[in-house]
Length: 63
Image (cartoon, rainbow, N blue to C red; front, side, top):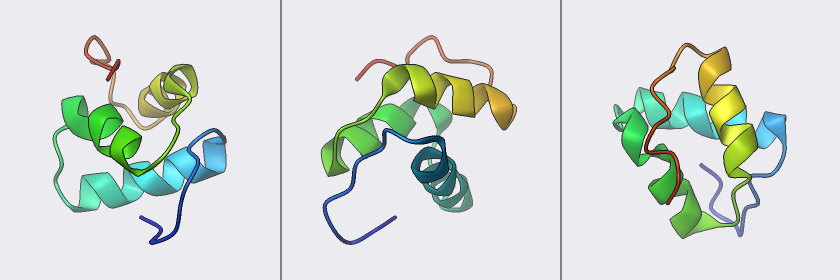
């Protein structure tokens, strides 16, 4: 994840973050809380991106 102030409000930013979180073996239910500690997150777009990469259990997506 970037070391600067980040915004996760584009598909590109979220997909890059998801790849890194998955590589770090962060549980999917922790993606939103982790990203929200770094910067603003479009939670609806995050849910769409998680669906795109096959992470369909988005029940706890809200931080």
